[in-house]
Amino acid sequence: MKKGLAILFLSLAVLSCPAQQVDPLPAWDSRAQAAWWDKNPTPDVWPQAVTDLTAQLAASYQQNHASAFSSSDFQGWLEHLEWIRLGLDCPDLLSDPDNLKTFIALGKDGTVAHLFVEKLDPRDNRKQALKIILDLAKSNPDDLREYAALGVAYSLVFDQPFPRNWPHAQVEQKAVPIGDLDVVTRFKFYVQANRDKKLDQDLTQLTFENLKFLVDSEIKLSEFTYAQQSKISYSQFDDAFFSINYDTTRTSTANIAVTWGYDTYNLQDIEKKGGICVDQAYYATELGKGRGIPTLYFHGQGADGGHAWVGYMMKSGRWNLDCGRYESQNYPKGYALDPQTWQVIDDTRLTNFFKNGDTNPNYQPAKNAIAWTGINRNDPVLCRKILDDARSIMPELAETWELESALLENTNASDDDKKSFYQSWIQQFQTFPDMKVEGQRHLLAVLKKSDDPGAHDLEQDIVLQNRSSGFDQGIQSASAAIFEKIDAGDWDGARLEYEKTIRDFGDQGGGTLFYNVISPYVAACLKNNQLKLADRALHFAEERMQIDSGSILGEDFGKLKGKVSDLMQQSPQ
Image (cartoon, rainbow, N blue to C red):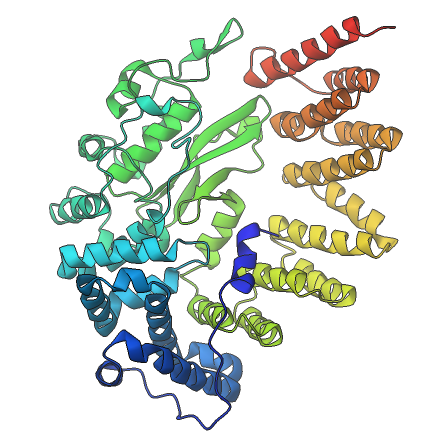
């Protein structure tokens, strides 16, 4: 279970609805909105207004069930409620008169406020995100209204610090041209560049889901100005990655230097000096962002070890997630960061979202249901019903299944209930291997807990069905089985599982197999003074894998082998 998902059910108590006759939910339109603000002009009356509106929404849901979430009236008032609740959650922020005035103005207009709460994630820093959107509105409300999705993207990306090793771990931070971090300044830069026709995409036409992959950069705006002078055609944007000459000297056996070795890491520096895959990928992602093209930085493990490549939004609006990804290296999965939460997300999830996300007509009703779940998080039974409705609206949306899984795990649901749910999960995602495997792993945990004899067969199925294109999933499951036996002190059983895993995946596992199985298994052997098992493990793997001694993987394998050899020599016979 992803750690952040549980937040939806574990944080903040919610005002309860009074058991009394409530007025029907009015139509959502400008007149009704204005009437609400006339009746509730100041924060001191908002708590009661929130209670009343929550009761009206609850009555509407009770009457209309899942169809309520497709109602524009329900959605309008739900988002209005979320905006007011957000203000009540940040009283010190709204104690500033200018902030309060701006908050109310945004609430009365609705355009920005509704998009903001619609895209707010439970893992966002709500107070900081609200502060940013208020600052943008105070700076220029008309620009924010016109570029609402851009402003919301900045608010929900810059609400928390970027990762400490941004943009990647193979360059020293002092070399990266980080600067111009004031969000208002960055927002104005993009607005002006868009109006001056300097960008390859019209930012007013892009959704929040795409724009968050545009604004997720901390480099100086002068770098973006430089990027806008690039002659690389948008229709041939793959050239941005391949235009950087590969510096083979940095990955040679005699001199592996995976870290950038120069004082500055400007785009122009990379053009002149060349680089390795991480530099090519960084260059392409930042060049794209400067030109108004949403981009993603991917990394993954292949036959010769780690690699980085690029995803970008094409002119058509579809995404290419394979720019610079070499088929010969057999990368089963690429990993990126979701800049809204800085959580790891893989390319198969992104592919599924771009296909079944905000372009799907059922997406917004399903998201309305999820938002309603959040408001009712203090009632697990009701939450379960709402999430069931959400899944019925859009069964292919992974988020609803993950949230219901979090609910089951945090409310001590019965094993039979969990089994039924995860079996449905597996059936739903038969054609989406990553989600299918996630459901199988949840089911496996339930079966093991209840000592169900089907656990062993399911564990083997996960490995067998992922031997080819999804071998990383099989390797991860095999690794879990190995370490389960190590934790139980069954070293002979762990050895048998390890050797079976090497036989199954040695011909293609590459870096995924080495870094997820071989290296941690050998480390566990050394930690527990099982030197002979560690030595045997490396020789067993070496005989069954093709390892290029000149690659980074080959270097790491050689270092581990040397370490074990030294310890064997030092150990008394």
